[in-house]
Length: 447
Ligand SMILES: [Zn+2]
Image (cartoon, rainbow, N blue to C red; front, side):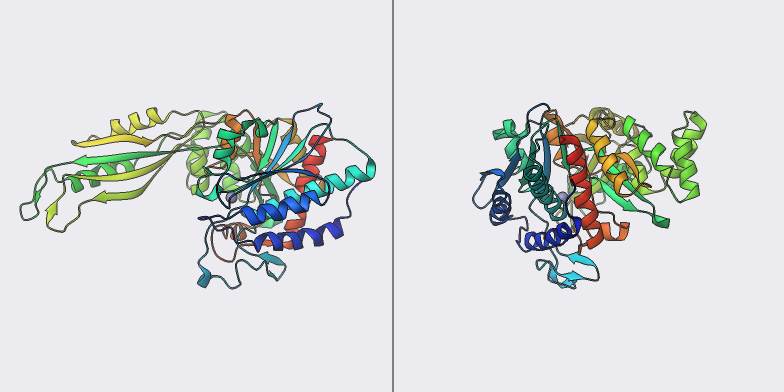
């Protein structure tokens, strides 16, 4: 039996509004009151809950609907905290959950309180359906609401992994991190994040003689650094396809509206080296495609000198280097050292990101998501996706949980770009779609 989606829709909207009204700006987070609201919503329907408090006024909330244990659990994960707002750039109160022109507005509407609400509704609907049909599930369905994701998760998922890994015992997890993108011509594709790049910090330091600026020196550290950076600006890591990016481009090509890019995608995965190179070259011109085709290097911080008339003994640039899964940062840095021939310049890894295995794009969970998506929109393409950003899913994947990232709400890129920006909003129709997608996927995987 299927829920009465019309009344579900009204309940979802009012719950999302309630969730947005808890100001969980991180720092400081203060997620506990929101966790209590979620706890009450679950318990009122007879769902068992566990509340953990890693720090004062911070909370992890777990809700569990028990299955018969035939299969291992599935986790529905969302974070409760949000990033800050620049109030004067919003046209509405970011913490009011206002409805305007067919959208729910508010900080977190798409990151990540929309999915948090869709997950909550999925739990409530599952429990109601099970009570009415006296049915049982094949596996536990675990609702997990975490704090602190936007500040790195040390007090959220990081804390949970360290102190309560037993609560994360699961075969699959659904989290944020993917996309349901409406493209030109109205076609929609669901990109299911199945792996992510690994973020490292590399520091380029130039050394030279210090001295009074009145006497120019040939080994000036700032000039040396500038020459090294000039060399790096002209360098790109080689194109490397992974199992996931190969599938991503092959399947995206089927729905892609732009003919030039469509051809480039087909060429890229053709298996013919010359065509693949031409395809990679064309796709690399689009920054988001370029970022999934190779290891990426972005300078982000410059340091050097304190006073206008003193030549500093050193100057440094910080690079954020993001490697494709399975690619060694040590080898990237060796390549950078080899091309930067500038004397007095060193290149060192100052923070090493942690690898996580990819989640299988041919799993039962992936198929459940694709099945649920196509039931709602038979034309929808469902593709595995390598994200360039880092999510809590990496921590789960390291524990052996096959985690998948979605953003279950169909959106234009322009609405998606409001994430972390101003006037963040979710279309009411997409909120419905997302709730039905999560419910459909969980109903399939746990039946
Ligand atoms: Zn998020």
